[in-house]
Image 1 (tube, rainbow, N blue to C red):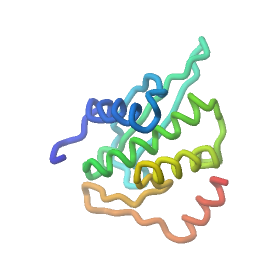
Image 2 (tube, rainbow, N blue to C red):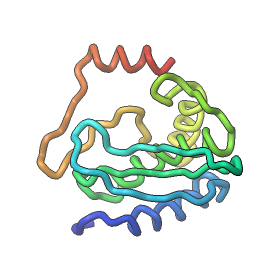
Image 3 (cartoon, rainbow, N blue to C red):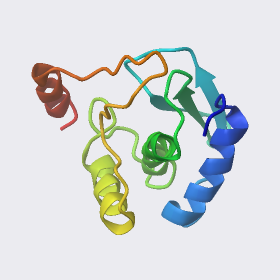
Length: 146
């Protein structure tokens, strides 16, 4: 991409991916860039409003090397969380949100569209620090997300 990531970059891709991968079912979402953090590339959160509606928020790490492939992988990953929460109305899907509901959509999208959505991706950061989880971390995360 060659430029600094903006919220409008995220929103533009969200709208495209919503139609392409989720049949346009996902509702409104707010987008945020969060400070450099080499351990988390994206985050989905939501707040249940007083009227019962869900306010969804997607955060993308500013330290992510901006390529179309990286953006798609991270944004769609967070959109899966949004789909599970807002469309399937699942409040708890594994301790870190990567339980059977998440993995079902991850596998579907990877197979049907040739995506590479991972639960804990190893992507490159702007500062050239690529955090590769140790084996014990991978095992622990796998156990927690059951």
